[in-house]
Image (cartoon, rainbow, N blue to C red):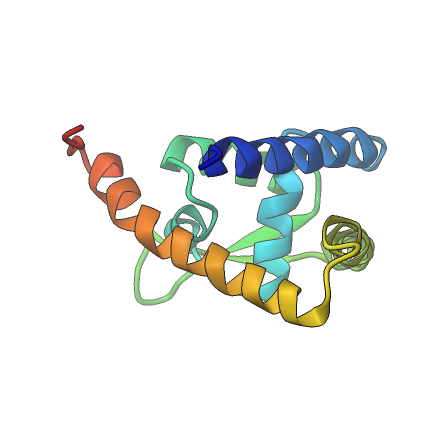
Length: 150
């Protein structure tokens, strides 16, 4: 059996590299586009929810979100019921960029599954969702200070 995680990682790094290069002229770097997409798709989301969606640590998300705000892609609004949590919303600039990012996502998805039948694409998606569900409990445990036993 081949090393599945190496293949998944190589695919992810290819698209990450392409995106970081292609989005740099628009003021997005170091995977900030991932956060902007999540905020546009979930207006009012809080940072902690993004941490879970994107599977990063709080400080990484915080840096990316701060830069998006500084560069005018998003804005923070104080939640009335919780002073600590700030809701994140795209600005007009962020919404315009989101339309471009959606087109890129459609193109990249099509390129990635080129040559696969619709049935194969659906099977691949289902299998990847199962793999993610298998990995998430370990991620959660390690993120919260636990360690895995090998």
